[in-house]
Image 1 (cartoon, rainbow, N blue to C red):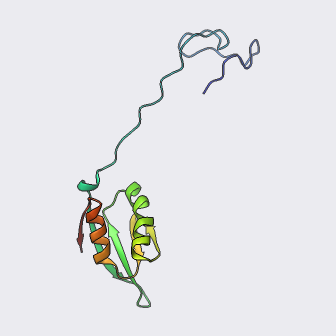
Image 2: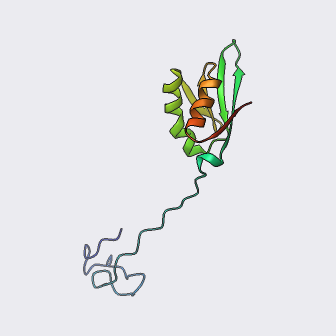
Image 3: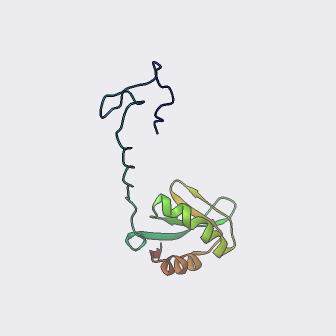
Length: 118
């Protein structure tokens, strides 16, 4: 945002990009805000694969693959609360601690995602 008249008469009174007058004399309206970029894939178009992985030491982790990054960040707290477990996002995949495939698939389907066990 350019503030007009702040340095009137000084060497910092730069010309306007549109009319070439000094900013202190410019009458141009402010530029319109940039249009929002919408590139999000709807939930119904995302195919989520929910699988169970076994970690060293015998710990089990429910892993969700196929989610958009924005959706993964929004879903993680909801799934953690729904399953009563901890979780994180690693390498673009959502990980929920424990064996919760059935709960996660049902919750995702309720939210409109195409989810399947893998």
